[in-house]
Image (cartoon, rainbow, N blue to C red; front, side, top):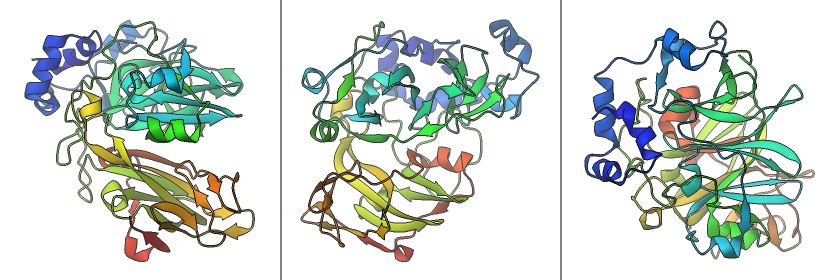
Length: 397
């Protein structure tokens, strides 16, 4: 089977093909692909992309490979509709992962069971134009401001990958953008950088509890897709091999280990989920920033079982500045609750004080994201790996 044909068929929902993937697995498809040469024929791209200026590129074009689908073969959601949590709960398991994004008091959740089949949602939240993106192959969920030098861009999928990561394009100039970094890599916007906005991957149940009035992306996307199913069954098993990734895998961590990466002052540090599963609260410093890492138990992986609600449980994790006003807080677990030692206030996964003297206050999100280790280390090879023995303190469950 030619794996270059897999993703377009997946996105047209071919049950027979999904059954084959369930039997043979993504890795066999990747292996078959590696027997064929990578796509480097710029002339073929120009036929499909006549408006893209391939003379301007900041990465070697041979690093960009076809993932299978043509332009927008994985269609973005351009007219997103939203519903309340009660209505969403009819089809969305409380443990399923959602991207939580808030802007100017407008809080929204984007279920990965929907993003799995679209990868990009062009939206406006709290008056700000944003692109909510998810690359299943890298487990990279990132929200960007769609404005560049005063121009609002709309994004789609190229069907191309670089280092196994989604390559997006903007419809205004058809420049190509690396999803993982938000950088323009081909075309008129070469070297431009999209502003990344703080977001959190959390369970729908945690979102609903924290934001009962928040809205959830509806399944009424304008497309017919098998929402709730995972076409990448078993992809995130530790020890497996990334799809269409030909770089050497950094040996410091298993390729498919989830990590929380934090950046500050040129220092990049990653917190493996295997470590966070043992220490739900971490106090650390990254560069000049005192950092708190909070985790919550019970969220489901979106990339494990064929039916997401049948998947194994994994932690959710988020990073925040421990500095609030002029005070640096230190956090610990008490009776399974996140408490700061200075005021004994209680905090949730979203960095909000929900009880105690600081109730109503919020921590500033750190520049961070949750991704697979292979992808984070491919784009951030200088990353340090968190050592619990050197942290300011951690608290286990």
